[in-house]
Length: 107
Image (tube, rainbow, N blue to C red; front, side, top):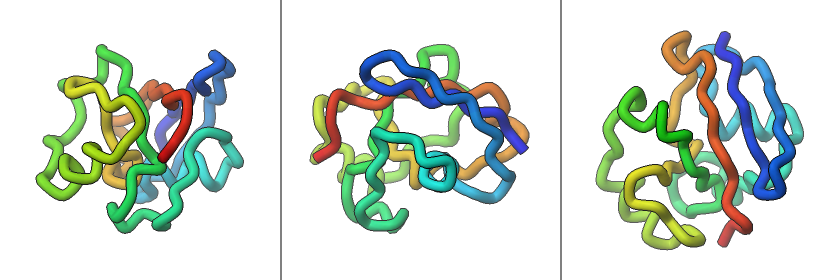
């Protein structure tokens, strides 16, 4: 179980426990956190679960794969260093304390 902080674009924070094996996107969905739409359900076929990873966490996450990188090109205002798709981030104990911030909107 990992404690993940989701920060809405307006600054509202949601700190929730997410079970190992789920994705960061599923943690948001299961806890009704606004700002992550996840239109494709986690298939890495859209960019509606886009977030900005807190700078302290960027180097601690698994490498971005080419499919995720391609989908991020369709995200709203992607940041080359901090943008990730939450459907591609599997929760493990190593992600305990992860902080992500949602963009102004998802497209």
